[in-house]
Image 1: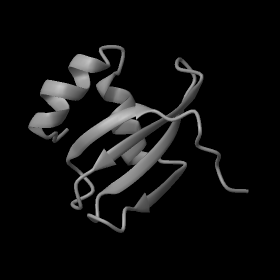
Image 2 (image 1 turned 135 degrees about the vertical axis):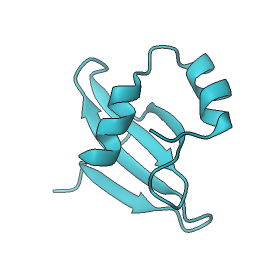
Image 3 (image 1 turned 45 degrees about the horizontal axis):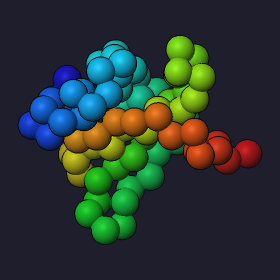
Length: 79
């Protein structure tokens, strides 16, 4: 799994409960994803039962390098 320095040094430090396998799952089996217009980064969402909410994982435009991840209770899947 590729990650940015920011993810390793900031995100995981601030959110030690995050699991790398959850982030990988968001990339492999997202319930929804979208490209951010301002910087072409890609947002991926996956439901994590252990968190009881959706996890948003943001990658660089390559769709592989994880830059950020956080619980997103405001996310509502379409449909």
